[in-house]
Length: 158
View 1 (tube, rainbow, N blue to C red):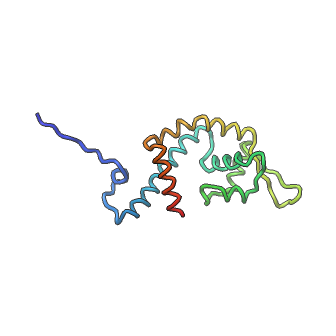
View 2 (tube, helix red, strand yellow):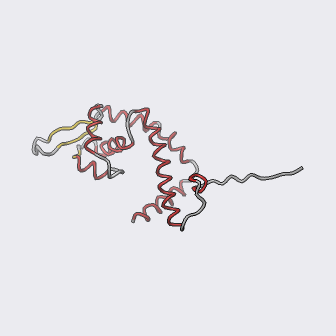
View 3 (cartoon, helix red, strand yellow):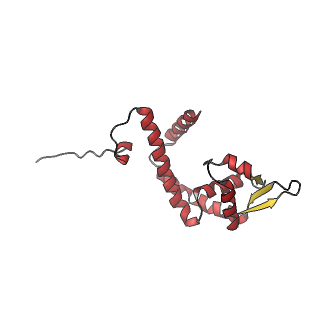
């Protein structure tokens, strides 16, 4: 009787079908980009049934964090995860869906105050209730490993 083993290679190399990298820094950078894309796709799938994009979700979370205080567009844009997002367009889309309000400041006509609506808060609560299911996507790491990962990512940007 002959036995044999099948070795399944898991990791970046098999995922992108590339066996060689110039160095560990290049591999890490590509790995971060690939993983970010993987997380973004997962996030898109979870938000799609709610009719919002990850960037719109980010705006709603920012507004909920300041609620009931209203924020100016600049404040929202400066807190965005994706700094290249068009905050004006995102807010307008959310306003059209009654998830946020835009009000001209009575003291300064050039200032527009933005606030999350009850409908927006309710949507975030619904998504929050599904959060545990989404976080199971990341089940392969322990809390200690997540803490180390967060430390390393902060250090990388530092």
